[in-house]
Length: 148
Length: 127
Image (cartoon, rainbow over all chains, first blue to last red; front, side, top):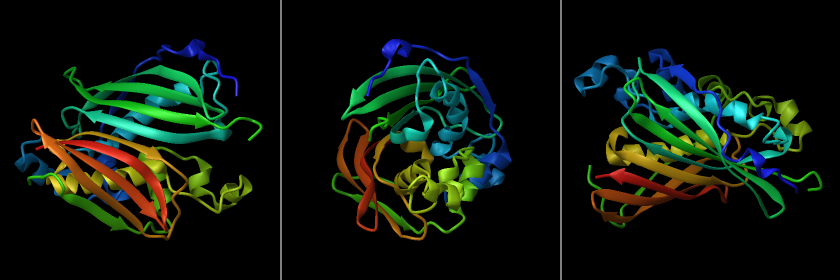
């Protein structure tokens, strides 16, 4: 399928996400996490954290909001109904805890073709309120051609 | 907890009928293929399917459980293949490929009913 690579390198306005204690607990419950660090404030504080710790994969929550505008960007041109989440990569820095404010910037990292499908990669970089990089994510999508 | 070359990690989990609804709310991903049976069938799926990132979270959990907590998990990359379904047991498995310079590299996958729904998982854990 034909892809337009002009959007490679395009960046999107940063998105700031305030990490809430109950959101962390809700997420932990939904993915089956029972480590007290994620749900018990006293246990988290005893371990040296300011509040409950977000499981590493909580990155999908604060980065998901930031990459959505790129996925729907007409300049990128993804047909959402034909999109498949093909791969995901996260690299983590310091742990995120409830009370943190996480700011994420997104850019279009790659657009290409693979086996007749459009291949897209978006890079999201998230920093906490101290400027530390807490997570870099690569979100890989494939888009089936209209003929397949 | 210390990880050594050749150590295996893993867990099993059977997604219950409402897991995709809870995960949609928790994650913010309300794509109807995960939460609306009728819509999912209308686009040719066998029914509601799991969120790939929920399944990846099970892979991540196998690593952080083995490492004794979330502090050590520095990197995880996976490929999604096919689709995860509700009600069938998922087996997450991984093997420590090597331990070098304070980092354990772990290869992993998630299998459901004979299909590898997550493959080429690679993680780095500080040890």
